[in-house]
Every structure is written in C-alpha cells, then in structure tokens.
Image 1: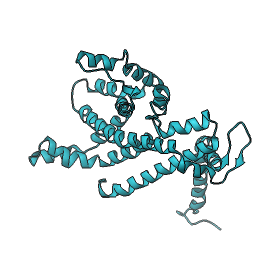
Image 2: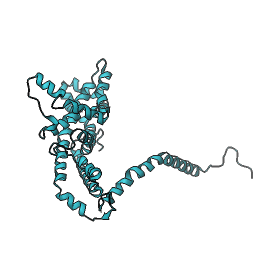
Image 3: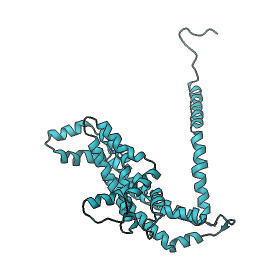
Image 4: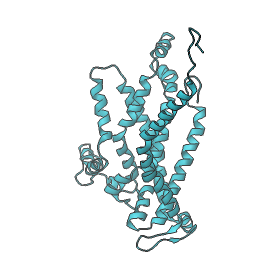
Length: 312
C-alpha cells in the first residue's frame, strides 16, 4: 500500500527517551562509583564497626568479648569523661562566637574597594592553610614561659611574665586565642556572602538616609544570616572535634587535665590504653552530642535566618 504524501511514520519517542535516561543513569553511577566505594570502605564501614565495638570489651592485646552496656555504664561514672566534656563545652561556647565575629569583621574589611585588596585577602587567608603541626609548634614557641615572644612583649610593657599553657586557669583561653590564627576559611565564606548582596539594596537604603551602621544592621546582616547559620553549624561541629593536634603536641591534656578535650580522651583510651571498646563508646557519645546540637540549631534557625524569597 502506498504511503500518503506528506506524512511520516511516527517514531517511538518514549522508548528512545527511556534508553537515553538509562544510559545517563548508568554513566552517572559509574562516575560516582569511586566515591561510593571510598565512602563504604573508609567511612560507613568503620562507623558501623565502631558501633559494634562500643558493646565489646576489647583491649587489643586479648580477644574481644561481648560486654553489653558495660562501656556505657562506665562512661556515665567516668570523672575524666565529664571533665573532658566540660573542657570541650568551654572551648565550643567561647571559641565559636569569637571566631564568627572575627571572621565577619575581617570579611567586611576585605570587601572594601581598596587598591591591593586581593593581597590583603590572601594574607588573611594563608594562615588557615598552615599545617596544624607547624602551627602548634609555632604557638608553643610564642607562649613559652621562659623565652617566648608573648612574655617578651609583656616585659617590654613592664607586665609580669605569665605561664600561659602551663597555667590551668590560662590554658583554655590561650587555646581559644590561638584559633583566631585560622579564621581565613570562614572569612572567605563570609566574603562570598557579602559580595552576593544586591548593590541596589544598599543604594536604596542610602537614598532613604541610612548611615553605615543602619545599612549594616538592616541590609547586610539580614542578607548574610544564611551564611552565618552555615558557618555556625560547621563551626560547632568542627569545634567539638578540633583541638586534638594542638593539645596533643602542646599540652598533652595538661596542666591538671585543663586541656583534656573529649577528642584527645578518645585517642588516649583507644591508642594509649588500648581500650578500643570504651573508646568507641566515647566516640559515639560525642557523635550523638553533635547531632543534638545540630538539630537544635536547625530548629532555632527558623526564627532568625532570612532566606530571600521566604524559602527555608
């Protein structure tokens, strides 16, 4: 039978589209396969293993044995664990707000249209890329009570020398002060948020007679609240897990356990005392604390974080 002139045979578009989608899904899976393997082998696998180990009595030198809730019961009555939690909480609640404010102020300064501003941005950012060990050794020399640079500066001002990291009352504030050295990464994130604020908002505020403080209070600050929230969440998570390198190298948890952070206490139990089961229980307790604080932050963010368009 002769085909009508001007008409074509319909092509099966859904079948062709399904083949293309299947090919894209296959290619996408192949591309993420290395990451999936790494996640399962190096992250999910060890996490599940540590969860099982938290219920074992295992000291490495002898075979593991089922301990049930023994490690959790020991954790509740362990005075060093409570002390490490106090030290960690002190570090988190004082360092995170200080670092956020300092990073935001630095970002505001680095957002000014000045000549050579890129050089200043690099100068503020570079210290955050210094290896943690090198940074710890540098600060250890600065705060050396005998020949350190900090006491040398105090002597020039006729102020008595301090013991710094060797004084239980000064050790934690010194550790917090040292963290100001590495706010460059947070500063860059704030800087990106500041540069994403539409210029016409500041121009409109200026035309309405708003000064510098009013523009910051009613334009800049609300527009960067999502960035503040992001840095707050990441900062608290990082603060709960940070401080190991500094305390391990500089103080060893002393003096008088004043710098014994939870992360260092976990390391000691696992790799110095070889109590792997108890160290796993400590790790999961810290994990749960971080999860709770993160959930509370997300819940509280609904009252103060502004998203353009009203989408949360």
